[in-house]
Structure formats: structure tokens, C-alpha cells
Length: 207
Ligand SMILES: Nc1nc2c(ncn2[C@@H]2O[C@H](COP(=O)(O)OP(=O)(O)OP(=O)(O)O)[C@@H](O)[C@H]2O)c(=O)[nH]1
Ligand SMILES: [Zn+2]
Image (cartoon, rainbow, N blue to C red; front, side):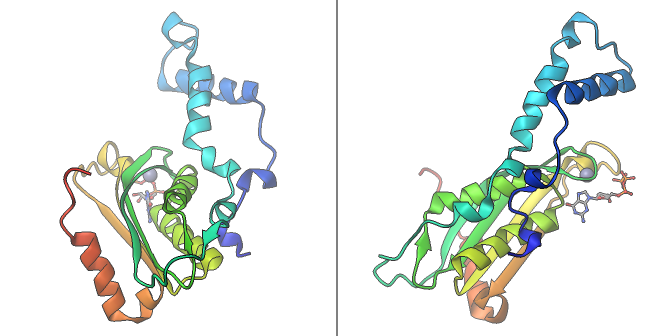
């Protein structure tokens, strides 16, 4: 398996203890200029560590295993399957601040399909790690490509990086768009155009 897909990253490294992690948060509070022993901040190291368990839950999950269960009774379905507007919440690996956006994931099946929720779970697993948007986009597409072996995969992500909107260059309206196309989405202009058409189709208001 391509290491680039990085299945279970925690297994490769020893995790520090919870106490060590909480002590690091105390240090950061002091670095920010506050007193970690004042009442309002006493529980904060514990809260931050618990928040990290949510923000970075994706290291403990196996993205390949998620896609293993497939269905072959598809009545010969051979058109694009697309999940549009999957809410994306990740953290940038340079500043550890949020990346908020939407992921659009499509594939053209080859004989078998996967449960649609699994595609959203896959996005979630990679998003809940430290990321840059290009890698996140590539990992989602490449995992679907390698595990499902469909005729092609298209992943497009549009996101705002808070490291650009709330600090640094401070450009609040910038949206970063990345895509990864494999197979027929890469080689066949009409399949790619169909994906783009589905992406831009009028959203259904009330589902
Ligand atoms: N390619 C890419 N860059 C990112 C992503 N998220 C953040 N960055 C950029 O990572 C870069 C890190 O650059 P550095 O110069 O090392 O960090 P910095 O001094 O904090 O940079 P500024 O953000 O420009 O203040 C910045 O240009 C960020 O905008 C991402 O998903 N993809
Ligand atoms: Zn950043």
C-alpha cells in the first residue's frame, strides 16, 4: 500500500502521556501571557487535550478499512456517483488553526459501489489530521482509487484557511480550491465536464 495514503499514523509513533500534553497546554497559556492557575483557566489544559482528541481523531482510524465493504448488486449502474457539499473541518499543519470548507467526491464505479456514508467518513478521517489542502485532496482521491478500483475518481475541495483569514495576510474572502482527478476524470474531458456540471448544478433547497 502506498505510504502516501498513511493508514494509521499513530501506530508509527509513541504518544506522549495525557499529563505531558496538559503540561504543554499550560506552557502555551503562559506563553500567551496569562496565568494557568487562575480559576477560569484551571480546567483548560484538560479541555484542550479533549478537544485535540476530537480534532485529530483521524490518526487512529484506518481509511482503507472504511471502504472495504462494497455492494455488487447495482443493476448495472455505470454512471457517476457524487457526494456534493461534504462539510470539511480540518487543521492546517503549519499553524494548527482551522481549515473550513466543503469537499465534493465523485467516482465512476466499475462493477461495485461503496456505501455513500463511507465516502464522507473517508473525508472525515483525513480531515481530522494535520493537513495541507493539497495532501488532503490527494489522499481522499487516491484511497478511493486504490481500494475501490473504479474507472475514475474526482475530488474537489474548496476551503477557507483561518491562518490566512484571521492572521498573517488576513484576506478573509479567499477560498482555496484544489482537485485531484484519476482515471477517466483525468483522461476524458467529457467525464470531467460532467463532474463540473454536477458540481455547479443548482443545489436542492429543502432535502
Ligand atoms: N500549499 C498550502 N499552503 C498552505 C496551506 N495552509 C497554509 N498554507 C501556507 O503555508 C505557508 C507557511 O509559510 P511560512 O512562511 O512558513 O509561515 P508564516 O510565516 O506563518 O507565513 P504567513 O502565513 O505568510 O504569515 C503560508 O504561506 C500559508 O498560507 C495549504 O493547505 N496548502
Ligand atoms: Zn496555516
